[in-house]
Length: 601
Image (cartoon, rainbow, N blue to C red):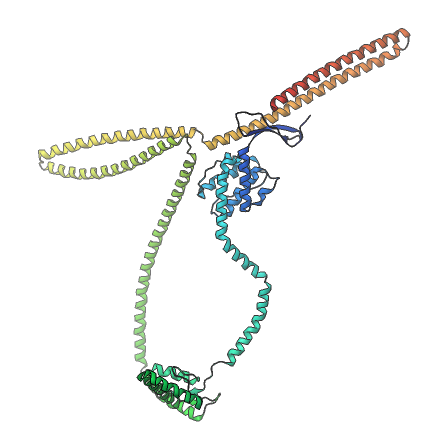
C-alpha cells in the first residue's frame, strides 16, 4: 500500500544522536507517485527556526507567518527584506522569488553572503549553511539584521512621517484645516481694515532747511504725527494739576534737591517741545497754499541758480567745439590710435593667457587620466584582495600567509633591484667620466698610482657585476617557487567550491536515482506486459484447441468422457499454477514488508 501524500513522523529509538528525530516524509515524483524520503529533525534547529520567525515578525516581515511558504523562502525573504530596509548603498540586485530553482537559490544566497561583510556584519555565514537551513548559524545573522533594520527605521521615521504628511496635504485636508482656511479670509480682511483705520496720520509739518541735531530731528518727526518722546503727559485738568503739585511737594520734601532737578529737566523739555512746535504748521488734506509753494521755491532757489549756471557753461563748450572742428578731429584720431594700441596689447595678452590655459588644460586632462587609471588600478587591487580574503580558510591560512610573505619579499627585491640598477648606472657614468679623464691624462703621461687605482676599480666592478648576476639568479629561483606555490594553492579547491561540488554531486545522485527508479519501473512494466501476453497466448491456444476438439468429443460417448477428463486435467494444472503464483506473491510481499520494517526502524 502506498503512503498518503503528507509528512508522517515516526519517533526513532534511543541512539547516540540525542535530541534528533528521524522522520519519513512522503513526497511526489514527476509521475505523481508517492516517494519516501528519510530526513532528520533537530529540536534545537526547530527552536532556532521559531525564534527567527518571531524576530522577523517583530521587525515587520509578516510573510514569515504564512504556513504555505517553505522555511528557506521565509529565511531568505526575511534576510533580503532586512537588507533592503537598512538602506545600504550596495551594487547588488537582491531579487527574491518564492519557489525558485536550485540555481536561483544558489545565486541569491551567494549574493547575500557577499553583501553582509559590506554592511559590517560581525557574524560570518556560508551559502551552503543558508541552503542547508543551518538555523543555529543563521540566527545570529538574522538577529543582527533585524536590529539594524529597526535602528534604520527609527532614524528615518521622522523624515518618512513628514514626507507622508506632505504628500497627504497635497490632495487632502483635515476638518480643522478647512475651518481655519474659512476663518482666515475674514480675519485678514478685518486686520487690514483695522490697520487702515488706525494708520499713522501726519498732523503737523516742520519747515525745511533748519539746522537740527539727530535728537531734535527724532522729536520733530514724532511731534508731526502727534506723539512725544521722553516727555511726561501734560496735566489735563485743575484737579490733576493740584494732585501733581501735591505729589511734587511731597517728592521735594522727601528727595530734596533731586526732585527739584527733575522738575527743572521737565520744564526744559517742555520749553524745547514748544520751540519745536512753534515752527510747525497744520497739515491740510491734498492742498498746497501759494505761501507753501513760495516757501518751496525759496528753499530750492540756490539749486535752481546752480543748474542754470551749469547749463550755460555746457552750451558755451558745445559752441566752441562746433567752431573748432579740426581740433576735435585730431583729438578723436589720437583717441582712436590710443584705443587701437590698447586693443593690440590686450589681444597679445589674450593669446598668452589662451596658450597658458591650453597648456594647463592639457596638464589637467593628463592628471585626470592618471588619477582615473590609479583609481581603476586601486579598485582592481581591492577586488583581488577581497577575492583572496574570501579564499582564506583554516586549512590554507598558513599557506596564504607564507604566500603573502613571499610576495612582499618579491616586491621588496624588485624595488631593491630597481634602486641598485639606478645606482649602478649612476656609478658607471661617473666612473666612465673619470676613466676618460684618466685616459686623457695617461696619453699625456699618466701616473702609475692612478693606473693601479683604475685597475682596482675595474676589478671591483667585475666583482659587483658577478654578485648582481647571482642575485638575479636567486630572484628567478624565488619567483619559480612562488609560481609553484601559487599553482598548488589553485589546485586545492576552497570550501565554497567544495560545497558547490557537493551540492552538484547530490543533485546528480538524485537525478541518477530518479532515472534508475524510472528505468526499473519501465522494466517491471515491460515484464508484466510480457507475462500477460504469454498467458493470453496460452489461453487463446487452449480455447482454440477446445473449440476444435469440441465437435469431435461430442460425437460419441467415449470421446466425450475423454474430453471431460482432459478438461479436468487442464483445470487442475491451472489451479496449481495459480497456487504457485499466489505463493510467489506472498513471498515477495513478505520480503517487501521486511525491507520496509528494516528501513523504518
